[in-house]
Amino acid sequence: MAVQPYKIAVPDATLEKLQTKLSLATFPLETEFSDDWGYGAPLTDIKRLVGYWRDGYDWRRAEADLNAKLPQFTTTVSVDGHEDLKIHFVHKRSEDPSAIPLLFCHGWPGSFLEVLKVLPLLTAAGKDGGASFHVVAPSLPNYGFSQVTSKRGFGLVQYAEVCHKLMGQLGYEKYVTQGGDWGYFITRVMGRRYPSHVLASHLNLVFTMPPSPLRNPLLVLQHLLGLYTPEEKAGLERSLWFRKEGSGYNQIQGTAPHTVGFGMADSPVALLAWIYEKLVTWTDAYPWTDDEVLTWISVYAFSDAGPDASFRIYYENMRPASRGKFGEFMSYNDAVPLGLSYFPKDVILMPSSWGRTFLGPVEFENRHEKGGHFPAYEVPELLAADVKKMYGKDGIGPDILKALGS
Image (tube, rainbow, N blue to C red; front, side):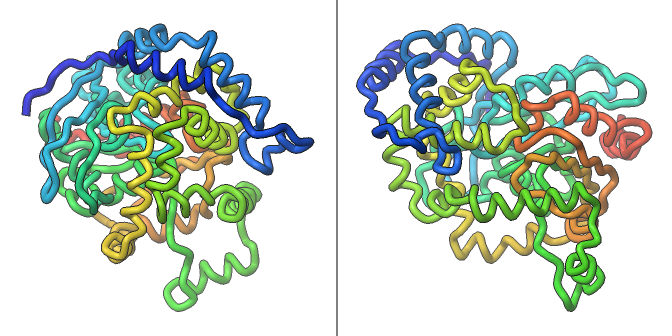
């Protein structure tokens, strides 16, 4: 399929409609706990952001900045059992002759924006034994400026198929992957479905099933006795907080995506509050500027598929057909070497022994002192250093280059 250069160009009429909606915004009545994060997004923050979005924020400036910094393209990818889809993606090649093709896969509530800061670091020529990469960062179907899917059943297998076929259409028959959030699950599926193509995978979300008393008695004993490092204990506490206090959105989007989707499609204020809460609570005190927040939200507001479409991956993943394959995709895969990076304010943080036992051969591992769910954006230098070291000359780089024929 042909690859076409792409520039973001939101129609003036779309911007005018947004301004009209923002000018008519209705906010909840104020109470003594309106700004209590325990209840969700604070009223004061949302009012401030809506006011700036309406009266001060310049999307055209943000749009021009993204177009200048991110080389973007579109192409058509056919999906078995589904339609041909227009896929938007960032693609930047390194000038390093030994660069490694890398698929960068985002999740929710992220987008291709997550690659913005880490892209120049990953494509820079390798120094001090570190690797360099040809980076491909797609907008997943139903996200950003990729096409909406029209048939039910578009789940992890189909997202993996899109990403794999995109790499092939760009001439990368063998490649490595990097992912967090849904990118973790999608790249895990890719490693299962296309093991001769996926040479290795770096993950910044590490999710596993808990150990079994019958299969992993020593890990169960370790857990019962609490024999973990202080960082691992803090990670388990963070994971417990997320399960109890931070994961309600998952059940809503996984069981009734269209119901809440009406609010997202119609109300920019609802969309802002829904995602802003995650940007703050899922990061490690990252100093979000109002411009950064509104650019992040605007990508959803101006999405070709509509912001509601991004919820459907949760629903499809909860269907029995997907649930039946979940164990297969999450089980140990000895065909794909792994790198695992843990960031303390991510929402799921497993003990290191679980990742090493249940996922695959771990060739690189690092547990950081700062960073959250969006490390490519929050702490790009840390994520890039991990990826470059994993694939560097002192890591598995020589094996990868040999497999690539370099």
